[in-house]
Length: 151
Image (cartoon, rainbow, N blue to C red; front, side, top):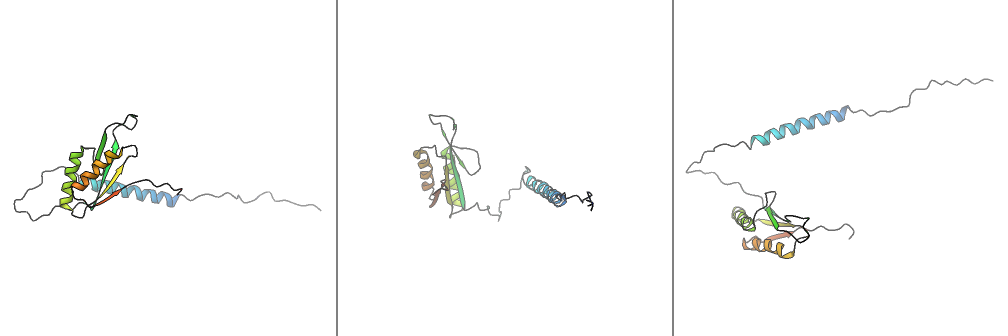
């Protein structure tokens, strides 16, 4: 008896349909292009009117402010100068940070402060910021620390 094998099988290859992914990427690209265009339109420099009897109010600032404390040169083993900044702003002297916090407290009485400090800083450098926050009568203070996941 003779057996006949059919060597012509249908291919068992499979593929991934990339059409939905291309659609999503295309839509995201359009979205980000539009958003960047709107945000750049808000930053156009211009001379705004300054009415004498304006009824406009100053926009309230957020109820929370982050003060960053870091080393000016982290690679310096002797310890370098400390840089202070309010949020994402550029580094400033501590006196300027104090003035900025005072204005923020006037605009938002319930202001809370968060201190983020590099762990290589000495406690005295962080304590200076704590004093500035206390002098501006900001009652709620949080200090950021990294908690290990092993505990």
